[in-house]
Length: 259
Image 1 (tube, one colour):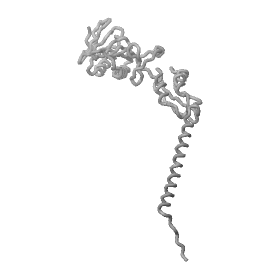
Image 2 (cartoon, helix red, strand yellow):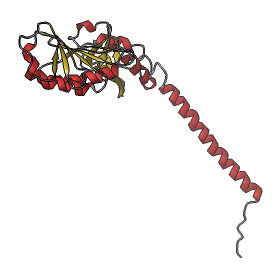
Image 3 (cartoon, one colour):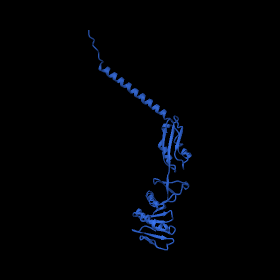
Image 4 (cartoon, helix red, strand yellow):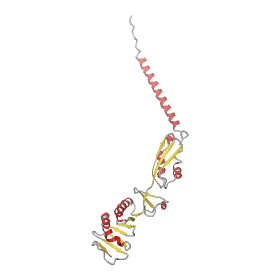
């Protein structure tokens, strides 16, 4: 005699489905609560404290004591919950620190890598310029090697630094270098050279006018280094020499005027 398999009634099937869904939901809730409790434990300030902070850099002007002092309030608490961005901001607020980065090093150490400011010029009376043309306020900059003096209207420091570098490159073959570069309010250029001379350049195409000076310097002017005070290069096709002690014989150059 054949057996007949009985199927559950619709109501019993629905009940089984509801129980299964409730069990799954319960497991999800257990996992969420467990994860939350584990995360709370993991991030508690008294768990996983930082053990060591390692500093890497040149230490020419920055001291380890300064670095420790700047980050000490940021390394208290949980290793995983530290605000590394805040630490970087604090480190880069130190006058001699140019850039800094902070990384976690397992299990509980921090690694701080920093680079120092590379000062390339003075700007006005008090400020300094770094290698990318940023203004830097450093109170003990007097301890650094002598730097060229750059001057100009407010906000022109990137432009003046750019031109200074171009002028220095052009003058180098003749053994000269600019010690002071000034952009005047009329946008003319005044360059004080290492030999004491002052060059005056017009605002239009100052590089071409300086190239004219470089061309004539070796052949007509170098021998009179102690006799010249200023050279005006604002002329279209020539230059004018202001003498401290005029030479007995005129310069043998048709484009040089003397007065």
